[in-house]
Amino acid sequence: MAVGDLSPEVLSWLTENGWSPGRDIGTECDEDIDVRVRDSERQGTPLQPSDAAKRIIRTYGLLKLKHPRVSGRILKMEPAAGYEGDAEDISELASNLGCRLFPVGYDSEEFGLVLVDERGRFFYLHHTGGYFWGADEDEAFTRFLTGAHAPDAEDFFV
Image (cartoon, rainbow, N blue to C red):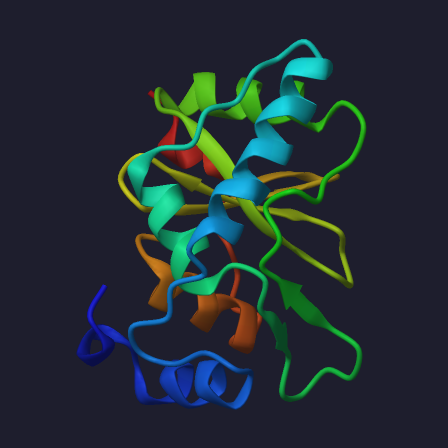
């Protein structure tokens, strides 16, 4: 996604939290992905990142994106984070959506996982279910910032 495709609010928020146009975490991206892939294999449900998920991790990985209005709420762009059994939950959601999903971060307040599919769409896996966060990072980040209702992921099942 080009910088010009980001809304002014999202662009300002990202910049305030350490992001800059052209950001690329390079080999740290590969290391975080490898940690996550190995953990999913250990759990018995291998996950593989799509090119879209790799792009998101390279661009936003390792950022701690603080919510501007909710103290202590942070969108942590850490793909290696997760919980025991999450690989199976991610795989089940991916199967229902008909495409691969890979974690790119999590919400520090709700501990929901932020996932990206092969098309670059964002989904949010919470203990209450799966939700659609947006067609791209601008929509997903806007949803995080505004708290707008997230449709059930079921609406996107194949």
